[in-house]
Structure formats: structure tokens, C-alpha cells
Image (tube, rainbow, N blue to C red; front, side, top):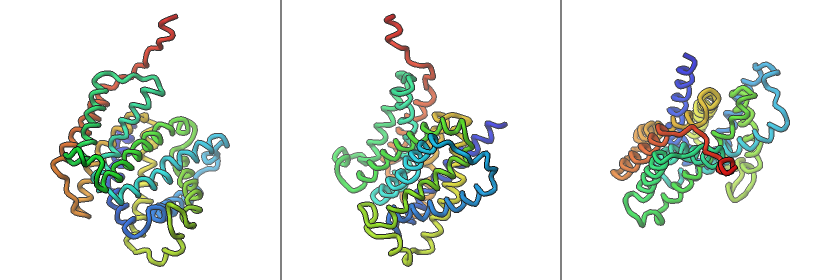
Length: 312
């Protein structure tokens, strides 16, 4: 029964995250990626800050050494992560963006193979290759020369980096979740991200050509509503559900739920932007998600044999 609740939390999370691409696109139509991200993180930090006030002090204490780890996670999973994602959405569709985020379990599998000594068997390798071919088909839209031409390749490339960042974020939270409550961790991460975004959002730099002060009067009501939706549902509720999943189910099993991201994103983007999937997008999606399913279904949980020990 406990696992059923966790699965429902993670399912809710990926459903909300599937809608996030469309709402993010609404926001960055009116603001730069950095300014819209600041607005979203500001709203979520206010919600988290108010919530922390009613949490017992004993649950809110974090050691100094873990604080450095938390700041890193706030960059890889919030500030840096969304700057890359929002920049990508300037050049690619919400459907493509969600498809590339869905390949994050592949990066998790590769990381576990090279860093955690968990071998990738032949079937897993076939699944990874299948996903890679699907991704290439989506990027090129069936044309080989499309891999290096067009504006969408910039956004697609950034989204692949985004998927890798999500994989690192998912894996790197495990140790903190053994010690602290998931809600407290994500609350501190958001507040940390807000602090690091302030000097970026309120100065002229390569990420933001103007200060947030100079654009605040031009922000449209739909932009505020999009930021508030993302803060409440995709950050506060979504990240909490994701962290609960990682804590109870593990990083690999939780990351698999990203398969549902493209489906929700496709429905949402079609309703809001009338984006349509081409034949190559359908075929590429089928290959990519089939490869992910094969990779997960035939996962080898046994550690790789240590060759040095065999020689001894």
C-alpha cells in the first residue's frame, strides 16, 4: 500500500512535469529565460518558506558539509537546469523537449555502469542504441543533413544536455534523502537557487541583457499565472513527489516514469499551441521509448566483476 502511494506521487509528478513545457513556453514568450525562471523560483521559495515555518526545527537542521552538496543540487536541478531548458524552448517544440527529457534514464544507466560498477548487458545496450536512433530521427526529422542545420538542432542539443543534468540530479540526491525529509531538502534547494539567481537576474550579463527591474512593468498577467502554476504544481508538488520516489523506489526505478512525459506534453502542447507530431517524430518517439523500456526491463542489477580480483 505504501509503494502504491509512492507510485501515485511519482505518476502525478511526471504528469505535472509533462505540462510544464507548454506553460514555460508561455512565460518565455514575454520574459527572458533567466527572468522567467527568477519569477518561478521566487513564487516557489515563498511557498516553501511559509511551509518551513510550521515544520519542527529538528527536521530543518542541515549540517554544513551537506549544505555544499545542496547548493550544487540547486544548480544542477533548478537554476542551471531551467536556464538550459528555457533557452532550449526558444528553439525547439515542447514535444521535442519532453522527448529528450525522457531519455534521462539512459544517462542514469550509463552513469551506474561507469561509476557504480553495474554492468550493462547486451539487451540493455540494444535498448540504448534503439533510443539513440530514435533521438537522431527526431532531431533530423528524417533528413541526415538536418543533424547540422536548422534552428531546432540548437534547442534539441540543449535538451539532451538537460536530460543529462536531470540524471545527475536524480542520482546525486540519494545520500541527502537518507538523512533529511524530501520536502525540507527541496525547500532549501529552491531558496538556494533564488539566492544564486538574484545577481544574474538583476544585472546585465550574457544570460540577461537587462535587469529584472527594467522589465517588471511589462510582465503580462498570463506570465505571472504561468510562473505561479509552475511554482505550485511543478516545483512544490512535483519535486516533492520526485524526491519521495527516489527515496522509496530508488533513482533508476523513479527515472523510468519519465517515459510518460512526452505523452502529456504532446496533449498539452496540441491544446495550447496546436503543435503536431510529424511521422518522423512519431517513429522516433516509438524507437526512443521502446529502447528505454528494453533498457529498464532487462536491467542487470548485479555488479561487474572486478578483473583485478580475478587475477589474484
